[in-house]
Length: 201
Image 1: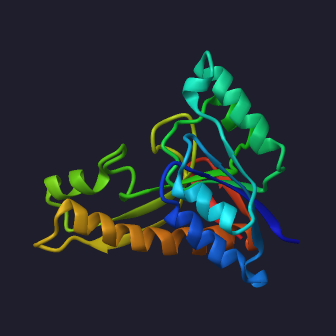
Image 2 (image 1 turned 180 degrees about the vertical axis):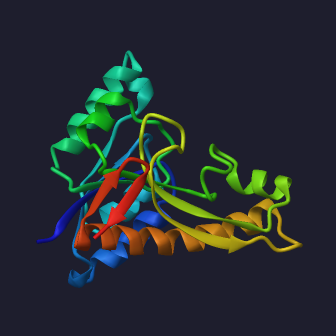
Image 3 (image 1 turned 90 degrees about the vertical axis):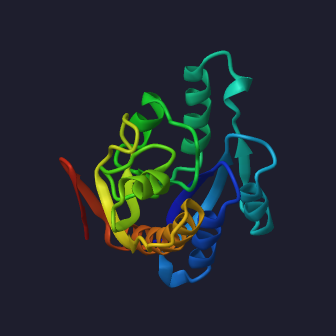
């Protein structure tokens, strides 16, 4: 049975495109059934439209409270009955209602080896700290910032001549490959969350 993915984006959607490409192969085991954004005019939504995937937009500023936005987003995503919800560069923290609706089924990718360097500037903080290895983490979202149980990690060496831009770009490439491989494994083999650990298969 093909698993249903809803993907949330805020920008160019390069991770989304990687998932769309992977889903084109029936053996991958998943289909992107909808793409949501938190702003108008994202290239990610354009990519989805080109692929014939339904899109929706919920902007925080269109709602009186953050909770109302969270409720609307939750209802929209739930209407597609996803097996897995993927944050692919979605720059909004979802609230408790959303997390309760998709327990253990909402994954996000981050450009550092968590728990090191959470937040918006992982590669820059990695460079500033002088670490020799950076990387990317796929994790299941909880109510914290980049604090959920870890699904997968990949290491990216920090070169002596790296800038924030060059390191970020290399991490992005590794991050995309890891996202596609890990989501595929999750939908084909299943997964369970045991405390802080995510066990695939």
